[in-house]
Amino acid sequence: MASAARDMRYRGKQAVNGSLAYDLDYAVRERELRHAGEAPRAREKAKARVLETPRVLVRARQVVSPLAVLSVAAIMGLALLVLMSYVQLTLLSADTVKLQGQLEELESENVTLTAQYQRMFDMASVKEAAEAAGMSKPSSSQMSHLDLSAGDSAVAYRQKEPGLFSRILSSLHGGVYAVVEYFD
Image (cartoon, rainbow, N blue to C red; front, side, top):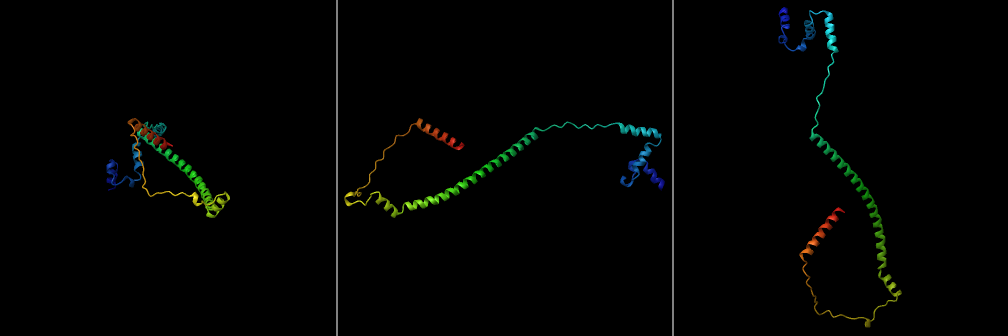
């Protein structure tokens, strides 16, 4: 039975029953069988020759896709746009802080000016200032009465219709003004 197993082992690779991972001496036996009749010097020369021949692995030149170049350029452009928007946001935030400081100053000044305004129009102080300037209450001879019992009358004048040239000119003026205002 052992001889039958030995004969099956040397018939070829299809004779191994199961995986070669179970047969740990397979590679050693195969190498010894290949070099069975050779002299030891010939085996050393063969090994040296195999070890001395350098193998140069050359990689094929890769071609860069134009779509890849465009997509990288687009990504870099978008990154630049995001960076610029952050710069603008920072500038706007700084301007907002300055404007809030000015608003607080103006609100406190508004409170002060409102108090002064109310003091100026106090009726007692107005009366004193008027008397000091030489003003007095009018007498009945200085007063005149208007009779408003009659109905009101008003005259509406019709304006001349603008011509085609003046309408086109005013339209262009409005359009140019709107564009300039938009970009300012």
